Amino acid sequence: MSQTTGTDRSAPDLDAEADWNCTLVGGDWRGPGDRGTISVSDPSTRTEWTEVPAGTADDVDEAFDAAKRTQESWAERGHDQRAELVQEVHRLLEEHEEELTELLVAESGSGRLKANMEIQTALADVAESATFPSRADGDVRDSTIAGKENLVKREPAGVVAVIPPWNFPLHLAIRAVAPAVALGNAVVVKPASETPVTSGLAIGKLFEMAGAPPGLVNVVTGRGSEIGDRVAGHPDVDVVAFTGSTEVGRQVAKQAVDSLAFPAMELGGNGPNVVLEDADLENAISGSAFGTFSHQGQVCISINRHLVHEDVYDEFVEGLVETAEMLPTGSAHDPGTMVGPIINESQRDQILRYVEETVDAGATLETGGGTVDLDGVDDSLVVEPTVLSDVSNDMTAACNEHFGPVAPVIPVSDDEEAVELANDTEYGLAASVWSGDRNRAEDVADAIDAGMVHVNDQPINEEPNVPFGGTKASGIGRFHGDAIVDELTETKWISVQREQRSFPF
Image (tube, rainbow, N blue to C red; front, side, top):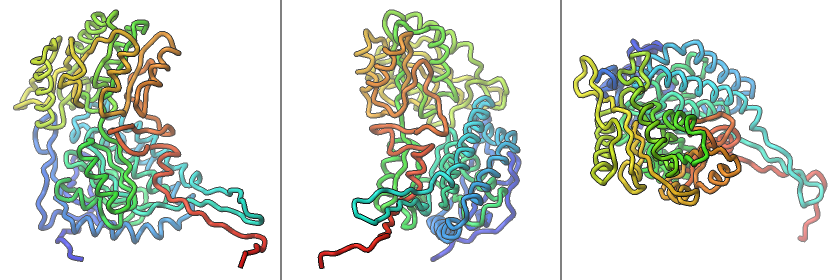
């Protein structure tokens, strides 16, 4: 196998001032060598924050080779040893929470509230993962044949490729890495190009600090267009855990299936938020605002459309506008910021285009629709919290996953129309329903075709012991709890004939 020249170097420190221009393969931290590099910018300041190597197909091959070699011995470790490693990663996450917060702020434009939420969710996922080694044991099944015992055992899947997104980079990477390692697998991470540190390199560093054997967690930075197919379709990959857009996910899934690997896919969403006329409107407005504007709307499970009963429509719009206009906006480095920058220029421009096209189609721009100037920053990425009224389900900002701080509000006349519009999308990830009548709300929730529906709450919820994922074009499989144990292990049936059996010949 040919190799790309790299420069072995010391590991980076776990902080925002460290030199992160490296990959992690087989326990070796390697500088870019003769590779090109990828610039990583701070979304708040629009300045280069760091750069990382543009990994090659040879780097991917070396990472899988290291992972495959290490996995065989790692799978033989006792349950207690695997659990202890994951528990130590949990301890280190807690110990370095402030450094990780700074990394998230600088790299992903996360406000401090969002960064804290992300780290707490990551901690919960890692704690749950530490219980997996003892939960993945097999069981004994009855047999239809006299004197036979059926043993159903669980074994690690093998090598898991983790391809996380940039919006919740730490959490959405470690929710796959930690359970994979706990269950006896080795991992190759291809982090998001916009957030290669928090979605990959920092996680590799945490596992190294915790005492992971070299090659157990490998991180190859690079552009998805150049190495993504090689990662997802590698001959040695057994599971591909991907979180991202449906468009890219379809390509990743095809590559995985061609290699007969299981595609664990959490893809796009177009979350409907149903507000019925008997809802506690003040609470519904507050929750709806949180579910729309958190992390600038850059959340796969955020509210994309508000389907509001016509009897309370005007009051809802008025309250949502009032809330949107009071939210502190600006740089993610400002501790008081609630709505910070969009990740990059192309995402920002797409959001603004969706808003413009929706207004051109007849919607009313109630507030927002532009950008917020930042001192010392040319061409700010901060989009104003935006509310659109008089929207129909087929308008651009409603029928597309806008992934921004935009609230299209659509009037509905009854529960049936709300359900019809909620389901009128290719997506089926998360949804929410607000009503003073629990039975009525549950009936609506049951009728919405989504993997997750929340009653009298907004949809940005995630718990480590509850299956997380979507239907239709929103994904394949589930993360968390017993669901992820199933996806990251293989079952083996061993039958033992305890009593002599008679055969017909």
